[in-house]
Image (cartoon, rainbow, N blue to C red; front, side, top):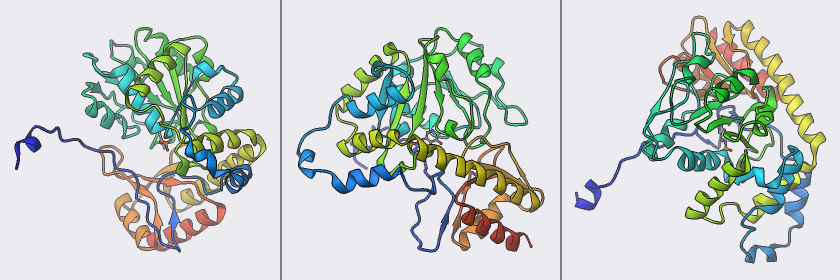
Length: 352
Ligand SMILES: *Cc1c(COP(=O)(O)O)cnc(C)c1O
């Protein structure tokens, strides 16, 4: 081994759910939306003048950031746009947490990308345990810290905390940036957007990947005080001025215009979710109270890992995490009614 290799830091990357490509598969493992993006997006892509692609995109993602400001009743200067919310969150960790001596805090059971960014940027972190029902213990966030990150609704538990709990944590942390990851909020939770005008240290992060059916275009955004956004923008411009590509900027802006389609597809998923909960319960699963587009379920007698593997043999993909506290749970994305019915039929066979 050459010396160059010895001096490198070894990193532990995030492991996303697999993207298999069987034609007959039912893919319920990465919380993608089963419905297509708004029809206007298809039209835009069909009619786009490719000559514009010679140019660099707008450095401030103008059309998209302005569309978001309008949609969420805020100002352009309160909006940061990134390549999926993973890029937005990564930039926020780099901007607000790198160099902290006191640990940042996030729950023991939450989005598994948080510890990956913390390790990447040498940010110390602590993970206060959720209670026995996977609920947030707000008092754990009252102590001195380098920052706080809360996914609400949480992943992979699907549980939402009331915004009063988030506000309480914010009130106890005037000296830290508090990030609220709202990847799933459109499916049920209470948003913390109302806190942004009241506290200049709250950053709400959202994505187009789930509720807006655009995981493939990689669009995420944050809404926060102009001060927070300016710091993030400066850091982004230290590594890549043009993170957002022209097609994502235009398609994202186009998608925001169709509120009726958005509401309809979210409502459909919520409706299917409630039916799927009943179906799973009838099969002997305990399903946590979901405010997201996925279910977190454990079976009363059969091990989650076994069910996961048997579903996979049938080309039905769900997510299993071999991690403390959750290694007997399955995370199941809510697909179409037909997909959930097929899932339940397959489970019935597997469970005998
Ligand atoms: C899916 C997800 C994200 C990232 O989504 P992007 O596709 O990068 O926008 C962020 N946080 C949570 C909790 C998620 O589940």
